[in-house]
Length: 498
Image (cartoon, rainbow, N blue to C red):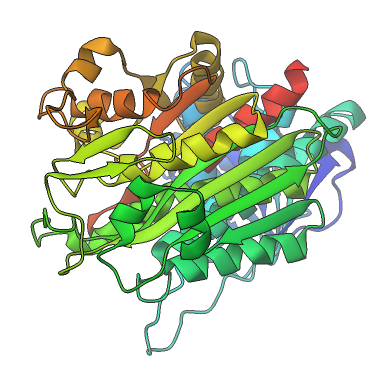
């Protein structure tokens, strides 16, 4: 998809479709008012006659309207003018993409970024256009043998802005949005693939592909022998029941000066989670192919950063393996020794994510990071607490937590902070080891994060539990790619803050 910014006053070339907004009160958006004059008041009449309500997300296509420069005019309902904000803008854009995809138009000019949206500058408005178009046009990599539906003809989207200064800001916003879209696509592709294809070795291959595509990325893959050499006993315990060999993926991106402390993103990459000996219930077990979504998200963020050529140093670490039951699988009551030297009593083999992450967090220390953020589909308890709307955010550093929370608001990929503390660690006491891997039902998301906190001492560290946000169930089953937008926004703003 090609994105570009154009100045409204100069946008006189014929377009395949002009996308304009109409408010619920009958107020025409800026471009709609201009087109209405060309159409002798048609748009106003459509609203006045009740043919087009202007309700948020409503669409009406006017094919080949005489008197306009566009081959088509697509009306988008913006809802109430007083309530038109960030979420309404995104909803209007989503409706526009869905309608455009059903037309024969190969190009479109989106005029919605001309509308006043409280607190959102031109760059953000344009960035949202690119993000929404990329996300809405994404297609799941399915293995159906039936004929595939034809891809939409739409290949070029222009964003109209008021002036040259706005065009420069919009172009940068489109660049960022397209990179986020690219990162989302990688993350979603990995998560949507079946677990017999997306294995630890496959994830490693895709990570190596990033290094081939971007010279700024260096990828190292550690096999089981290399993981054993690091004495990652917790990671190895999780994988020992599977025939699929584990991999530790390490991608380094160098965009800042040599020696500058990197940000480390650590991802949970369980390509299938049966629960191990603590076997999960059969309903929805197929969705446990999404248990590598944290690893997929950090690789997606790495791709976006490399495309943007951000002046930052970034390290992505993905611990990837399967959690399977077998005669050799780790058992409840087994005690394992982590890379840090701390011992863990495994009371529930389905609490495996924290076991691979604690070793990956310890490994991140060798990079002397400025901050470490781990991303994981860690607990069902987080879904109970926050539903499918917010990711859980826990941190030992208030400033880092504020950065991530603010990034989530800007990216419409929100996270909500939950507590960690010694009170939760007390629930993890073991009679036989330094710590147990579970601490009862109460506060399950917080005890899981507090377990990781024990391995992040002296690090500026945060944990994102995306168990409720990484994928959708039901008829829309599939990966969302979250929290790629949050992570990329966080890294962009780290750069800007410096």
